[in-house]
Length: 428
Image 1 (spheres, rainbow, N blue to C red):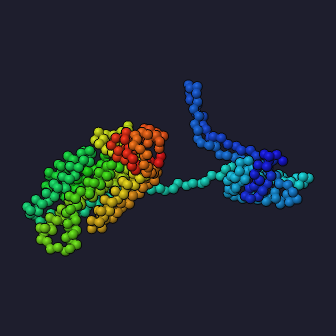
Image 2: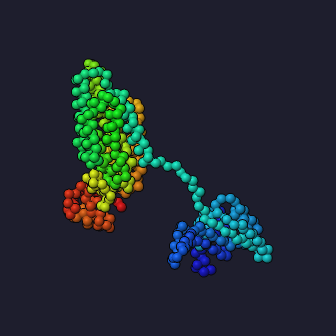
Image 3: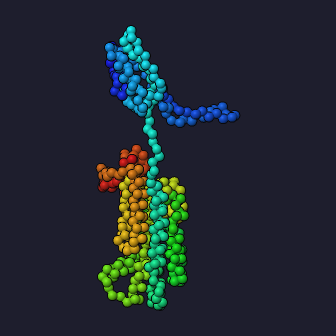
C-alpha cells in the first residue's frame, strides 16, 4: 500500500463504515452574468460560495456484505443530516439529496452503492431583536410628557400674592438663567429661546402652565440635530453636568427635607417652596429627556470626532473633544448618564414620573451597552521614555495617523511629548 493510501481516512456515514472507489466534490461560486446593450464588457455579480455536493461511489466487501450494504442503505434513507467521514476531505455534515442504488455482486461478495450528499446548512428563522435606539427615543418622549404632566399638577397658582409672584419670577430667572448661560445652550442655539422664556415666563406660566412647560420643552429639544455628525458622547456629558448644577435641585432637596421632617410652614412658605421645586424638577427632567434622546446617538456613526466629519458650525466646539470611541469610553459615558438618572430617582416622589425615569434609565443602559460591546477595549501602557504620539501610534496600531487619537484620549497637551506615565491605548 502506498504512503498516500495510508493517509486516507476510513470512510463512514452515520457511523457505518464503507470503502470508496472514488469521490467527487462539486463546488465553486454562484454568479450571475449581466450583459448590457451596446456594451462589450459584461458584469459578473458574485452571489457567494456555491453549495458543495459530494458524489461517493462506495462499496462493502466480505462474508457479511449483504448486511453491511443494507445497513449503509438504511442510514442513507434516514431523514435529516448526518456525519460523513470523507477519505480525502475529512468530517462533513451532509444530507443525502439523490436516490441511491444498491447493487450486490455475489461472485465478488461485495455490495456497491453510489450516493450524492449535499453540505447541510442551518434553517434560521428571523429572530426578533430589540431596537435600542428607538426605545431610547420613545423613553425620552415619555419622560418629557411625564415631566410636563407632573409640573401642571404640582405648580400652585391658587394664592394670589405679590410675594409669591416675585418668588416664582425669581425662581424662573435662576433656573432658566443656569440653562441659557451653559455652553451647550450656545452651541445648539437654544440660549436665546430660553432667555426669552425667562423674561416672560411668569405671565405665560400664570396664564397656562402647560403652554409654559411645552414651550420650554420645545426650546431645549435637540431632535433637530439628530442627523448631525458631532461628538454626541461629549454632548451627553455636557447635559449631565448641566443637570447636576446645584441651582437646579437645591429647592427640590429643601422641600423633600421639609416634608420628611414635618417642618411647620405657613401657606405662603409652602406655596413658594412647592413652586420652586416644581420649576426645578421640570427643568431637570426636560434636560434628562434630552440625555435619554442623545443616548440613542452615542456610539453610532453620528457620534464622531474623526477628521473630515461633516459638522455644522454650531456643533463644531464639540468636534475634537473626544477620540474614536472604545468600549471603555462608551461604558464611562453610560455610567455618568446613569448616575445622574439615579440621582433624579432619589428625589422623585411621583409614582408615574418615577416609572418614566426608571424606564429611561433602562433604555440608556441597553442602548449604549449594546454599541459598546462592538467596540475595541483599552489597555494601559507606560512608554519607556518621553516620545511623540506618532511613534506610539505606529508601534501599537501600525498607523502613524492615529497619533491624535492617543493624545486626545490621554489629554496630552503636545503630541510630540507623551509623558512616562500610564497611557490608555486602543487594542485595535
